[in-house]
Length: 102
Image (cartoon, rainbow, N blue to C red; front, side, top):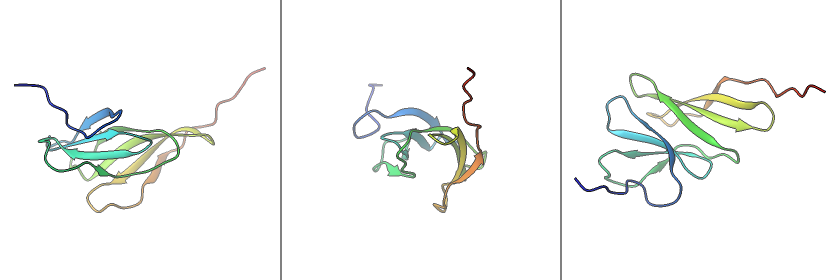
């Protein structure tokens, strides 16, 4: 088997396979995308953000993804996104801002 490119271009990082192995979630240009693991079709943008986002995991049924977002206000927060109906993301865990000790 020869290696092949799955996504179109750029720096696509943090791939996370769906539970059934048919879809790959990945980070690219400050947003999350998904693509069929077979390589068919184009990637689909799931989120867009002015800050970095990184996929972490899928729910067992493949309906939700868990991802991190680095925000200036609170640091790295965990978010949940329902990918089957393209609902709005919701914050799952808000991290505390970094404290500087003098």
